[in-house]
Image (cartoon, rainbow, N blue to C red; front, side, top):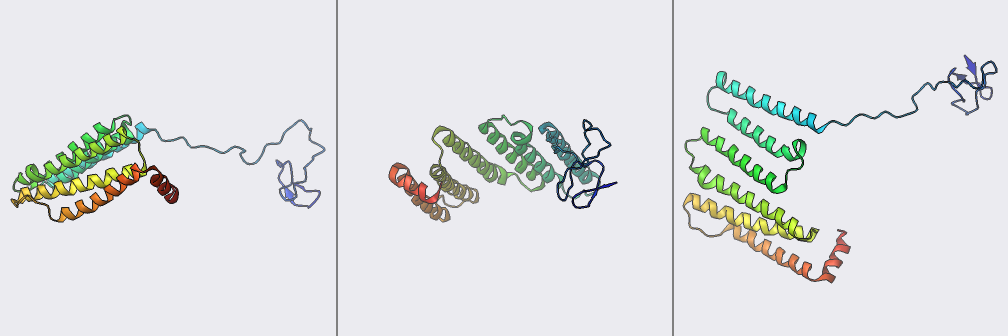
Length: 234
């Protein structure tokens, strides 16, 4: 064991300088061409990133195991109603939603939205096995899913066909909210046998129309558009 000639601190035999005062450590009995090993690694380690395929395999196994275990419990232990269909439907829906994220990232947005709509409709169809009838699915649930899918496809089409900005995206969102709420109320009234007219959705439609007209005006007037962008920082 050696000590620093300047401050007297105890030194490790592998140190080249004093850790306190940075005075060089010189051993006259050691040849100068021999380099001392540093007691700590000089390079930072890096953890390898997780492969997307491994995450996909793990996700599929977890969803399959969850669905199968719940189905077996439902068939042999808790045999009241087919409650496992709810969990199986959720697992299928999650699988379809995760396809473009971790399984196959090159799926076009149109195809992904279409598969999401089909998976959601299938999940709702599984619920019909635990209900007295299927009328609520064919007359209400399925048309709502179709409406949502169509609006989502139109939204993606607008984003692809026209220049994207915060104002234009907000315009598309408010227009589709108005269309969805109006269509939703008409579908509900048709299912319940009520007269086909707008009541609560008319309020949402009016508000969205006012906002849409304002946004269209901003998009059409360049000076106003640039002024709003500078003040709102987008």
